[in-house]
Image 1 (cartoon, rainbow, N blue to C red):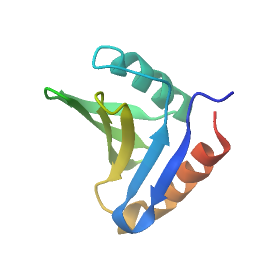
Image 2 (cartoon, rainbow, N blue to C red):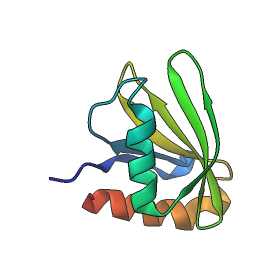
Image 3 (cartoon, rainbow, N blue to C red):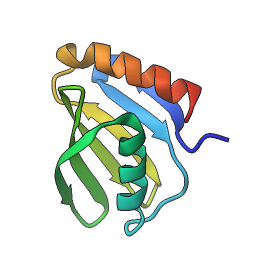
Image 4 (cartoon, helix red, strand yellow):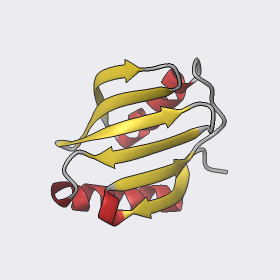
Length: 100
């Protein structure tokens, strides 16, 4: 069974909601690093608040946000520029749809 999958791709909003193993505030970092490593994406900057992690990520030259909210165990990508990110988000949606 795959660790990561596609929950929903909301193309018009530039959001990619993903299925992940269970995580909490402390385990988000290792889970996110594992997933990004499998995608060959890099972390540019990390920020966290009381209940959410927000990372600036680079995927093949496309900058996006990776967000993780531990109370709901939700993780998703958000485009910084929706129109300029369509190709990359479409590609990622396909990868997550197949699962890995």
